Image (tube, rainbow, N blue to C red):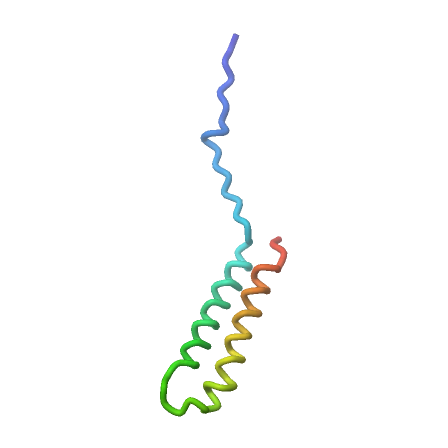
Length: 75
């Protein structure tokens, strides 16, 4: 009677939840969010176009990019 060795312990499952493109979207979205918050920072001239209009638009683009990265179907 021969004993079969199971290779379940030696086989590692390296499947990730997201694909490569999903992670790229997520990283790009976080970078865009960070850039938007940097544009929003500062204490001088609080009613500036950059802080009232541009920065929130950049933050929304970052959020949309992260959502696309989460919802995009991996290949």
